[in-house]
Length: 185
Image (cartoon, rainbow, N blue to C red):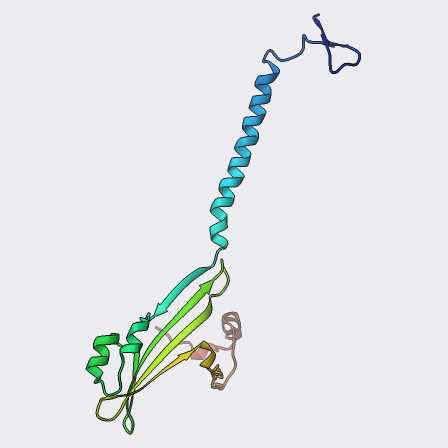
């Protein structure tokens, strides 16, 4: 047996049996443990770097993106053709026979966090009204705060009879037929 004296500190010496120790030096084992620890930390950091952007909000710009200079160039008396040349095609139009046409340019900004439902954070509606001669009469700009929530009527018209499931329909017909009512070939 091989015996080696180990000096842990300035205290007493201690005799240790070294015949059962690994043939690899202690520094190699220590380096291997450090490499594994470093690899684990690198994997955690990489996973965090990939997962972090998934939590950031996704911003979407929908509809007509209004250039600010275009609104400033609109002048009363311009024709529909002049307005379309300056602003582009409207998102929607409305025709009211008594007052003239209206062009609407609609845009919104929507934010979505991870798997949650998207939230509309901004909306802009530019309403351009024309008189009966097709001349620009007025320009109005509305935002999200100007909108009103409309309660949609989701009522259904009731139908006569019973609402049966498929299994109820199948099993309710058992025993209802008499031998005389079955058609023959």
